[in-house]
Length: 351
Ligand code: GLY
Image 1 (tube, rainbow, N blue to C red):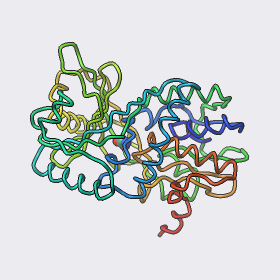
Image 2 (image 1 turned 90 degrees about the vertical axis):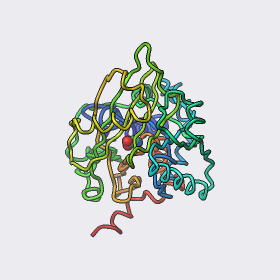
Image 3 (image 1 turned 60 degrees about the vertical axis):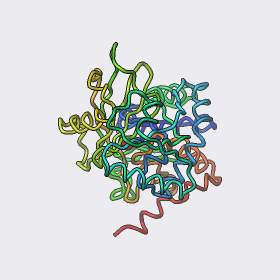
Image 4 (image 1 turned 180 degrees about the horizontal axis):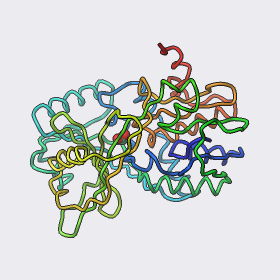
């Protein structure tokens, strides 16, 4: 396994638990984009406007999350799954129109959503500010604590006998089967991925409420503010992950002042109390983007598999990707929803 982010670790854990001898190569297991993630399990609200194939994959992954989290809690530690759903909130008239379009699209797809007024949504989440004029409640979506998840996966991998090699691979290591799960760094590892996988920078802030301030919301809030999208994902202990920018600037993981300003300005309009919160951390990660926003899961050549290109959906898609990779290792059919993620499409769309 090359890469020990959420995808590499999930695949390694599932493969080792199934009896395969697994070695993982990564200079810093459990770091990178997975460490910076918001941790949303949000196939509906993460892919707006909704991309049908991305949505189908995400929905299939979300169905697997309760079992995945429960097994992980037994094998490693609790990844702190929260299942309270998502609220999408709008502030300006233009944002409200976008929210209405989203509601229409989702109901055409048969997805249950409930439209709420500003007053109604503040009854559910009192920390939302007076500028919030409309909201959509999206039940069924969830979140996990990404760092608790990574710790749990590392513990589960060690418990299942996975061997860790703390080194960056410049070439594929020798093994019967190699799985490329190196996130944004995957492109350098195989010619089929050269032009397909690119880094997409995301900056986040981690905040904590202080005594005397309003507690953070109890579920994920996605805010549309002046046409920009941001999210606030609660964590234990009065903490909140606030994200995220999306920039195509290569392998740059520095947090810019402009990003911090943008994130805080938008979030404070939705949740005024955060002005009094402590800023615990500002961080940037590199999402592995692909040309069509679908991951790349499947055989690149005999003995080399890809599990990469998960873009904004790595945490969500981890259980499904691990199941697909285990099926490939066993030579049996994997989940049908993973079909569109085949690496074969990259050759078809290459210039
Ligand atoms: N999935 C959250 C993000 O990529 O920002």
